Image (cartoon, rainbow, N blue to C red; front, side, top):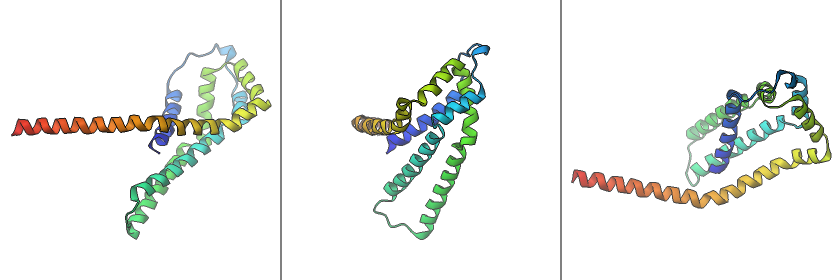
Amino acid sequence: MVMRLVVILTFCAFLVHAAETPSPTPSPSATPTEASIKQLLEVAQSHKLADSVMLQMETLMQQTIAQATKGQTISTKIQKDIDKRREQLVVMMKDLLDWKKLEPMYVRIYQKTFTQQEVDGMIAFYKTPAGQAVIAKMPIAMQTTIDEMQGLMGPAMQKLQQMQQDILAALKAENKNKGG
């Protein structure tokens, strides 16, 4: 669950970083048009990615809340506060991932990154059965990758937590020896 949040936040950070980081600009004559990029984004169903991230965030929030409150009796007042905060976060994330805000960012990024010829090639690819298969199956492949990465990261996270505990214990013992 934590790994999913890390992946989602990494994706969001990547989008922000990509929007702010200058990249080599194609020659002006090769810069793709806004219309062709919008066509690529439409054919590639890019807006669905933002929707998918939003759904994953909502699911992750629900799971995190359920895990944090598991086995506890929660008063109506606290439950209302939890619900209010969750709703605020959902509203914030929906605003952040609003396609009307993301699309201009994608246009800028793609114009800085790709040539018109490359955009035309991607449009042609995504119109093929293979391209449509990539669009349809990539979310499944990404989710499977995330799930498997969580399995790989579990032991590493346990070791990291143990290292933290060992270091804290060593610091505590050292401070005790200095004071005593």
